[in-house]
Image 1 (spheres, helix red, strand yellow):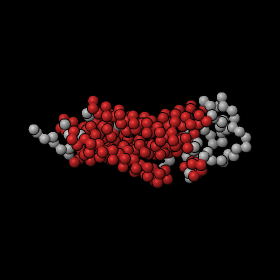
Image 2 (tube, rainbow, N blue to C red; image 1 turned 45 degrees about the horizontal axis):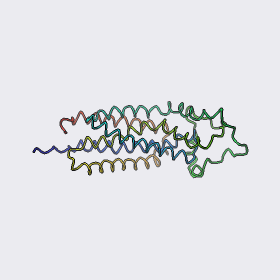
Image 3 (cartoon, rainbow, N blue to C red; image 1 turned 45 degrees about the vertical axis):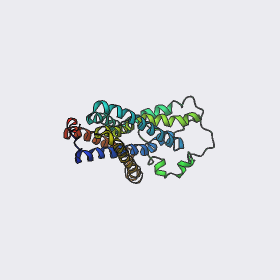
Image 4 (cartoon, rainbow, N blue to C red; image 1 turned 60 degrees about the vertical axis):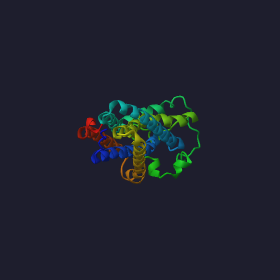
Length: 262
């Protein structure tokens, strides 16, 4: 029986780069997303919980759907098309997201009672917010386009909506791009698998590379990107990175056609 040809070194490196940078981009969106949502929902613990939960939901959905699509497509160009949509979505977040976030917040403006008097304007929203750097909590001291004005009087919102609104806002902005990026790992497993006997090793390696990229995304975002770039610039960077990953997907099909690697 003829042996299955081994995957070329160049193709293996390209697949590894896709997985690593996909995990990296997800964590950039998760970290900067919690910061981006604060002008609308404050720095309360619910914002961080919502952001983490929504990203985890997107990952679960992306893993499940990505594997199914990969079994049917068997070409990386299908993943590339998905990443093009995700990259464009990320690029327009600074312009498009405020409308949806304002709609979530503004629906409380007419039916909620005014805030109780005597509360200090400078009182932190929570213990978590009080421990954050001022420039992080205030989103660099700037209100994003379409966001609530710094001195605008905000009505008291029922507790249930203070918990659910951040989750809704996070889902509106970050669910779809993180879902698309999560499809990379199972897709790469399908493209790289040649023998059933090695699928376990391959799957572990792919998810380890994705996790390593996520770890890098956490530290690079927190220690470098937030210190030197605005939220809009970080979204631009992540959107262009995602479009670059789409380009790698098309390059895979061109340089190493599926028929040659089956």
